[in-house]
Length: 389
Ligand SMILES: NC(=O)c1ccc[n+]([C@@H]2O[C@H](COP(=O)([O-])OP(=O)(O)OC[C@H]3O[C@@H](n4cnc5c(N)ncnc54)[C@H](O)[C@@H]3O)[C@@H](O)[C@H]2O)c1
Image (cartoon, rainbow, N blue to C red; front, top):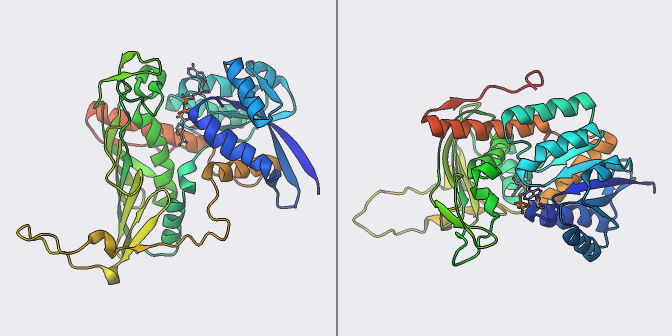
């Protein structure tokens, strides 16, 4: 069996996403399984090169996982021709500059979202990557969640009839950081450091809505900062300058209306941290991270509004669980699946839909959502095509 080895420069691996989802659950898991299998039966082995600002942290991480290469110099890592792919999971504000350097060094690029801080920056990256002839991709992990894979299966199977609307609830309480430690990094709550829930989550809603229901054509959003003061990793009080909740209406090509609430200032009374209810003429579904339940029109009860009587039926029990049907191995980690797809795209030109232009559409939705909120009006999203990039 033939095997080839690709060096993967991984920048930002000491962070939450870089370490857990990308290094441990993706790259090291792929190494453990003997590489990425290609259609011709050969394999691609990935050799991570850890890049970051803190030598001690990188050395400890490399030792812990038996990784040979690490450096605090991005330029050194990019200069090595054995390193074919550059991956970025740094804080968002550090991303554009590093990716431009990697494109200039001829690397193929895979990155966390958002690809850039502004639409202009995101389109510049797409244009630069195309001009350099390198492959590019952006993480779109939510599409690979078991709950959303089941939802996609329902759509493809025609379960819903005509889809009318989508209602999404995303969120949980993020502690302020004074009497209990915050479970997210403090930069998420500072606009000047690239924070904010619109920038963070609208990139996700862009590709989720586009891939399942239709491209977002217009957005009306209200972004707010519910918690104005927080405490950082060092216990220092700081003003939260970024939005921590966003209430959005998204009008989709084809006529579906989606409403999604995103909040880090809400307590969970749901089955999962994100849930989407989809209502169609033939049936409805509620999909979360892992589960998906349906109610067909033939099994829809007749609720009758009568506030004088206590509720007599358990509405949640009137829904049916969609089975996994995912084979013996179950659903694989979505980040890992997408990494494998990107490697096949780089090595054997397999199709990969989630490129920098798709990433730019995510940034565009965030930008238009913030503008809608600031100006108090509905914003239409121009179609971005290769030419505008
Ligand atoms: N796909 C997803 O579901 C998802 C979820 C969360 C975050 N993200 C994205 O991943 C990226 C990282 O987010 P995170 O939550 O892992 O953040 P984090 O704060 O945990 O990690 C940030 C990383 O960037 C590095 N870094 C480089 N320059 C820095 C600087 N000037 N200041 C501070 N840190 C710097 C840090 O050392 C660290 O390795 C962000 O772009 C974020 O939007 C994606």
